[in-house]
Amino acid sequence: MKCVSITEAVIFCAVLFVGLAGADNAATVNDSSAKSELNVTLLDFGPVGDHGWTYEAHMGASKMARKLSYVNLSEKENAAGPNAPQLLREYAENGAKLIFCHSSEFRNAIQEVAPEYPNVVFMWGGGTEKLAPNAGVYYERIYEAQYLAGIVAGNMTKTDKIAFVAALPTSQVIIGINAFAKGVASSNPNATVYVEWIGGWYDPEKERAVALSLINKGCDIITHWSDSDATGQIADEMGTYFISFGSDVGRFSPRVYLTGAIWNWEPIMTDIVESVHNGTWSAHPSQEWWYGLAEGGVRLAPFSKLVPGNIRSFVDKMQEEIVQKELAIFPGMSDEELKTMYYLEPNVAGELPKA
Image (cartoon, rainbow, N blue to C red; front, side, top):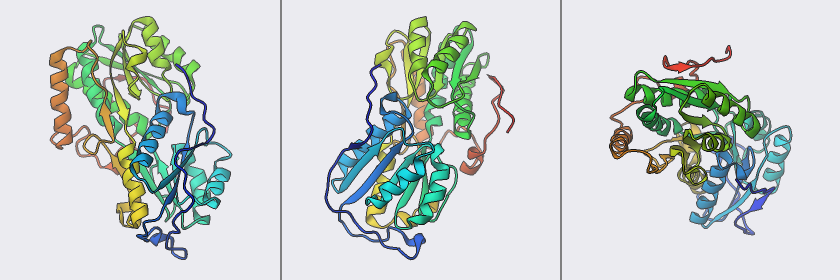
């Protein structure tokens, strides 16, 4: 896979930016409806060339900026870490009025810096709570697509052993594992999902080792939650069916690729930017956005020719039921409860570290 190294990309240039109202009251930030240009920044967790979390954020923000002509978009990859507070301050000082902090790793930086710039909106990607009056949260229900992918895996496994390579045991990763496992169980009660942990979001070498370990244990289908495509690479080398996560990377492993759960950040980023620009950001409930299949925030990748027609049709039917809210993957659980999930479904073999 060819990786693209981008230290700082300025996608659309402009010379004016809007001064947002509410300098003395952060709760009313962005209540101006002025239609001038808006400086927006995307701070990425990792490299844009990861073909996963960061790559899809880059693509989503780029599409958003092309759609909204008033947006002046800047982007910096590998921005999480000890220098994050300094970067937030630099972009705020240079005129950014909306900063997408695209990783749960930005928590401390937002908490530290947001109060210093009450007229700047800080959006925490993958966040779990509101960190400041001028800070919000955005995320996507990728677990809906993972449930559908689990149905495919449950139908197509021959060994009844399905592998899941997982980065870290955060609540969102655990939701994804459990949703995938529920999809597997709904189509194959005899199948088990085997989980092993990488220990980091982006560690291709470790990810390859974990993937190989699971395949060698007899798993004939493998999926992942990580920021690289190392799982797909080893699946292709070993001839093991592969379900991707994050991006549609079927072109890299056409011999074994089935489908994938894909982020689509354009709709949610577009709506957040418009709310800031139009002065309605403060009115959005809890300043929290969480999009799924119905809103176009996530999707299931196109099926490869390896997936039989009857399975495709059934998955399409289940997808429509999710979109129409006729099928609840975690019935009775609120979003707040989902955010604190720390258990594994009965058909998952693996351990969670003590919470």
